Each structure stands twice: as structure tokens, then as C-alpha cells.
Image (cartoon, rainbow, N blue to C red; front, side, top):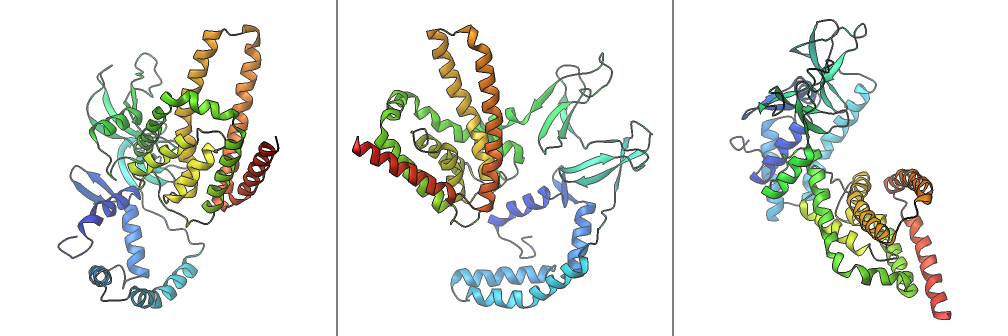
Length: 397
């Protein structure tokens, strides 16, 4: 890239990370190798946008963008010239390719189908590459695409394999953990949680860190500020009896919700959000421990202000709430055990836990839908109304 004048040192890593994430290339040792998907996409780009999918075009555009940074060229002129030709070409390509299904050639692997013995082929799906039998639909056998890792299983001596689950999460396990024979089956498995903690300790947070591990790492960082609360826990709990504070806090929550609808839609996800972003959202969660300040509303809005994708902001807010809720419940449980628990009420407690779980799940789905449509402002008016009424009632009382 440097020899061709493409990109800059600050863009090399994101560029490589993007083509790896989209599986246009795969990394084998120190080298990148193009995949069949990468070949199809490259061929399509060269066919439809030959003037853009060109090294000289990219290098020239880099120089022109440098001139914009230097102030010698107006950026609007460059965009106008680019979209003048690109716009019609894009519309024509969309029209001609509408409804056309482009098949990516399968890569034949050395793995054998467990059902029919054929060589499995590598296919690409929603959650990445996987192995499938070429005899479909007669044979529907599939299995995760695995990568052999250095070292041996500490439990049985088998190979350690890197696998990807159907939800896109990476984990490491023994090659024998899926054996049907119980005598040879090995249950050794290491999730990304331990890798994330290692990354945190050793300050490894680059864009090359797997997305699932980065997400977990960010949740850990966002949870750390909650320890600030412990010394002032009693003072915060005393605010629950201060109706004036609660009324004012509801109005503040309304302001956050109102402006969150008006902020520009962000694109940050677990792949691009930073540790500083996670820390700031974590600090907002600390503020939200005060009564009247919505925890989910505050953390979601803070994420949006930082440029999070709306769905990711909701997801991150939910995930970072899990350690907080568990910690609070453990503290309350310790107090309850100390004061004594009425064992006859255990069924009532269990029903309450189940009801809270179901209502929480439905609320998360609703919040995600509302956040995606940019309708948080609806709740702003509710918070302002309740906050205003609370303040008026406090003054009258």
C-alpha cells in the first residue's frame, strides 16, 4: 500500500481489519490470502466501477484529500466531481443487479462429511465461514470451520481448536469436546472471557482483537467505575427520600432523551468503539445510580452522543447492566441473610424473579425498537411531566 501511495499509516490497520472482518481475505501466519468471496467482490467492483477500483484512482484521491487537509482545495468540489460520475454508475448497477443472486464458488476442504464421507466445502453465511456437505439437499451436514491452535489440550492431550459459534462468538476447545462417544469426549473449553481479561491486563486493545472479546473487554471497563459508589452508597440511598432531587433528576433524564433523538446517527460498534468510550459510558452509569436518573436511558444516550450505532448502544447498555444488577443483588442478598429470610416466602420470591426477567426482556426489545426509530423523545415528555409534578407537589407540601 505504501509503495502504491495508497492510504496513510493511520489507515493501514483499519483497512486490513475491515477486509479481514468481511472475510475478503484470511490470515495465514504473517500473510493475507484472498478468499473466493474476495475474488467475487473484487471482480464485481472492477466490472461495474472500473474507474474507481483502480490503484491510480485511489492514489490520486489520497493526494487530493491531502490538499483538502492543507486548505488548498475545497472539499465540496471534490465530492461534486466524484459523485457526478459515480451516482449514475451506482444507480445503473443497482438496477441491473436487482434480484440477481451472485454465487461465491465453494472452497473444497480436507475435512470429511460425518454422514456421507464427501469432502466438505467452505461456505460463507450470516455468521461467517463454515463447513458444509456439497451433497445438499440429499445431505444437510454442516459444522463450524475450525482453526488449529498451538499447544495441546491440558486434559486429554488432543488438539486445541479455535471455533466460531452460530452467534458469532469465538471460543477455544478440545477437538474431542463434540465426540458422541462419552468415553472419549473431553469438556475442556476456554471462552473469550479469559482472553478479554488478559487483554485488559496487558493493554492489548487493537482493532485486530476479535469483536466478541472487544465487547466483553469494554463491558468490564464500563463496570469498573461502579466501585466509586461503594464509599457513598448510604448517601445515594438517602436521596430516595428527597422528592425535590428526584423531580429535578427526572427533568434531567428528559433532557438527555430529548437530545438523543437529535444527535447524528453513529456507526461505532464493538469493532470500532474505544476503551475511553466504554469508560465514559461507565461513568454515566455511576451518575444514573441516583434516583430519578434512568440507568438505561442515560447509558444509551451517552453511547449515542459518543457515536455508537443505536442498536449497539442498547445492546451495550444491557450487557453492562448485568454485572451492576448482579452486584447490587448480591449486596441486598447479604443484607437479607443477615437480617433473616422468611423461607415460606421463597415461592413468592421466585415468581417475582421470573416476572422481572420476562418484563425486563420485553422492555429491552421495546427500547431497542424505539432507539432504532429515534423516538426516545416520547419518554422525554413523560419525564418532564412527572418531574414537574413531583417538584410542584414538593413545594406545596
